[in-house]
Image (cartoon, rainbow, N blue to C red):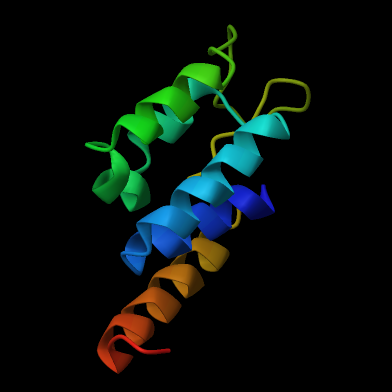
Length: 102
């Protein structure tokens, strides 16, 4: 899950290579399902990159009932730790305000 959140943060910071690398690590570690990755708004800047499509293709498909927070049913990353996601967005926004050269 950490690599997925890193991918989201890097994508929001427009650091495409690092975002794709983190996303690849998340998928390799078993993060999924594909629909969660494809639908995450934080990754929107990566969707036009062919590497994104290749990484998503390697993610596992959705399973029945996935997306709920019930034990054994998978998780929806948007529902997990919303405060953490909001903090990532704030950090990304602050990073953009600082400009390049960090």
